[in-house]
Length: 607
Image (cartoon, rainbow, N blue to C red):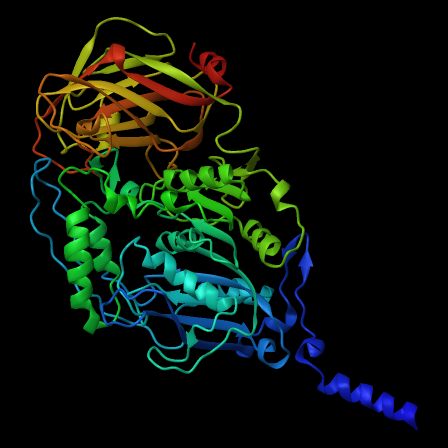
């Protein structure tokens, strides 16, 4: 009888035991990737709810710590069977709406250093319903055994606080959410109440991803060193607002948004509580930004240093998979490389994926899946031992990158290229140094686009220097550099440099890689330092050295590599009245290209 009783007791224990013992659903892994779990596929069985997470800051001036609006999408088994899962977390200032196409940009048609016409401001019409902040990432990850969490960043949507566009609160906000996901009791059922809510369904392992601004915030969170943030996949992230809105001392717009600056982006995203907007506008936009952004000189200062995540990386430990396009002229490819390079130097598990297209574009999904599987589920799938760099070649689909040991390509060596006169037609570009004493002059005129200048056979508005026709393909991998010795006939001038592949190809079948190799911009007034500008003495020569944007491109045989130097760039810079003259000392001007195979490889192609 005692034996029967014990058996019945055991059956009762199995039917009424602890949730962990009852759980039937388990993650499934094949080839190092999380697989779709049949029991988690049906979205009708997902639980969706929202809450507010309290932060450690008050940026809207109401005397209370700001709370961030958070939503959660999780399988019902986390409620009924005690299932605990890792988290995919995305944060954004865009979820509740933006200013759209409102005319809020700065006027760029004025003399360099002169005050611009005051721009328009705008109020964002907030949208969105509770409890759903966003549906991003849900279909990809919840069926594979993850919980997906979203939050609106400070001062947007139903999150409290003020947007600061790169200020500390945009790092501390996702930090607070991650702390809640790892067990802290800072979650509340309402924005102002005291009823607590806990993330009992979380394993405490969090990964973040997103694109553009949404890709910046995972990096912002990672720079806090917050416990539980195990891996991030930033896609085309803005890693420095100075590099986004300035270039080597020059006021430069992001591609496609001529006249945008950091205060414009503030207006674009400020979708938070209408009652808090006057205080936020006065404190952030009209005081901190107005005093710090400096559209007159474009100099790097404390305001910009505080919005550069490279300066904050010391605590970072989250495994990093970066993704970017080499032809992203909005958030330019340097943004990802500078962080990847620093993370690699710190010994953080790091990988970089570059494609040949423009803004956005995630790594292939299996690559992302393996990254999160390794660092959130703890599956030993060997991602740390795989190649560090994956580059999509010019003819290939983005889902089929080529593996390389690292980026830049370890086989790339810097090769010096020198200029020979030819203006107003084309001069030449070769590996042989000449001492001709030649100087050539261009006349600034923003009326001509960069593409028109590159295609012109004969013009005084640019200087262009061409290699001989390539006999074989040339593989550029890394960061080209330029040193220009120049004089201006005015105290201020723009300096723009494009590296192009000619002849220029246009038409239905042309690709983004057919024409532009890379680009760069600088302010000659900052020839000594990006933090200090000084008026140019007309006629005096100055040496200006700076990096062009990172690239990895194979220039095919039959093309010519062209270095084009001009002044105002119709797509990117302030546009002063035409007429400024720049004179280039060719003997003291040098282009450095990182060539796979070094000088022997380039010589074979051009000689």
